[in-house]
Every structure is written in structure tokens, then in C-alpha cells.
Image (tube, rainbow, N blue to C red; front, side):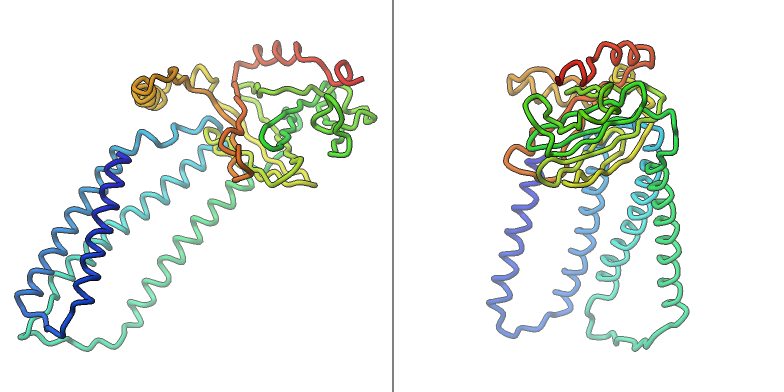
Length: 334
């Protein structure tokens, strides 16, 4: 598919160069009715080609789209995406037809005369008010969804701090008190890589890890800090992203709805896994296995591409067993 895209770009550049050279060699010739008819037919042919490419891309590239949202809150992101996508798709389909069909229908003809049409207040009102209403509805839905993601009022939510630095992630779980201790880069020393203030009693039962474990069906309250530059915590399968800003704490929350194993059984994930493994097998690489990932979505330096952390979603009882096995900071940092 990528090769086809490059071929298409190459052809487009070649045609553009050819057209430019024709313009430069223009000697004042005037298009005849035959020329206009030919160009009108070319417009219709290009319209057909454009529609074929649109349909092909919708089908062929669908496998690289993200599977169903793995968080409850992310369902509304998917809804908003689908609504916007179909609105744009329908409008684009209609407008492309009008543009190229009218190019053909109203091509130059010596026997035709152009009709002067000053304006239409009714038409201008329609094409101004209709997009305005659609945008207000879409933006309103988007703001509602933003507030949904930022609703951190659940007292039973699991509090996790995600700490970013070039080029790695660390995470800290709040202990039994479900309150994170204070943190600051000035406290970074030795194994205290997250700069936790160990004089804060809330820090004593916190637990630092290098891999995220999340329980299915329970709200997770994430807090983000950055040690050095601007990073962006991106969890694509949960439809969640937040900038990690040096000197401040940012946050959001979501509720996982599928365990990692359940997600691996999703038809979309299986289809994508088969496609990826065909490519990896041809290259002699190890097989791909689906995992949730925390990625950095800001270009933060030379190894930005490799800045990721594995996320494992499990059943609540398995999570409780895992978190109980993790050592507290008080037992590690002395």
C-alpha cells in the first residue's frame, strides 16, 4: 500500500511538471470547443478515479485503524470520530461530484453565454447557518467528552502517577491511603529516580513500578509529571492523551473495560495481528503479540520513538494480588 502511495505521488509530480512545462511553452493559443470537451471528459474520468481511490482506501486501510475503545470513557471519542468522519465523507463525496460534473457540464462552448448571477441571500444564509449548527453540536459533544475524561470525582479511583523523562516512563501507585506523596526533581538521588519526597508520610506506602497493571472496570486517576522536557502520555487504545509538563502536574482518568487477554480475542485485533505477523515473518522478525502501550506523542529527542511502557489490564482479583506483591518506597529507599 505504501509503494502504491509513492507511485501515486510520483505520477502526480510528473504530471504537474509536464503541465508546468506546457504553460511555460504557451504561445497565446486559444482553447477550442474540442479542447474544452476533452478537458470536461478528463474531469469526469478523474472523478471516477477519485471515487475508486476513496473506496479502496476506506477498505484497504481499515485494518490499520485502532480497534474498539478499551475504556468506557473512550466510547464517546469513537462516537465523535465516527460522526465527524461520516459527515466529512458525505459532504466530500457530494462536493467532489459537483465540482467535476459542473466542470464537464459548463465547459467552454462558443455558442453558450455565461449568465450573470449577483447573489442569493437565502443561499448564503443556508450555507452559513448549516455548518455553524453542525460545528456547535460537534464542539458541544467534544466539550462534554472532555469533561467526562477530566471527571476525577470518584473517591474509589486508583491513583497512579506517571513520570516521564528522556527516554523512559516510571509509575508510582498510591498506597493504602490512596494518596500520593509529594514529588520534585530536587529529590532525585540514587534509586529515588522519581524525586519522591520521602519526608512526606503519604510517600511511605507508595509503590514504584516500571510496568502498569490496571484492573478492569475500575476508574484510574492518572497524574503526570515530567523531569526534563515536554512529553505527552498517549494511551491510544484507551483514547487518552495528556501533556507531561515540567514543573506542574497534569491529570485525567478512565475506566478499562477489556483485559489484555480479552482484547487479544477481538476480531479487529486478530486481523491486525495476522497482517503484522506476515510482514514480520518476511523480515525474519519475532512474532507480534498485542499489548496495550503508553507512548510518548511529543518529539522529545533522539530516542523519542522508543519511549514506551507496557500496560497490562487484568481482572480485579489478579490486580489486587499483583499490587500486594510490590514493595513500598519506604522499604526500598532508606
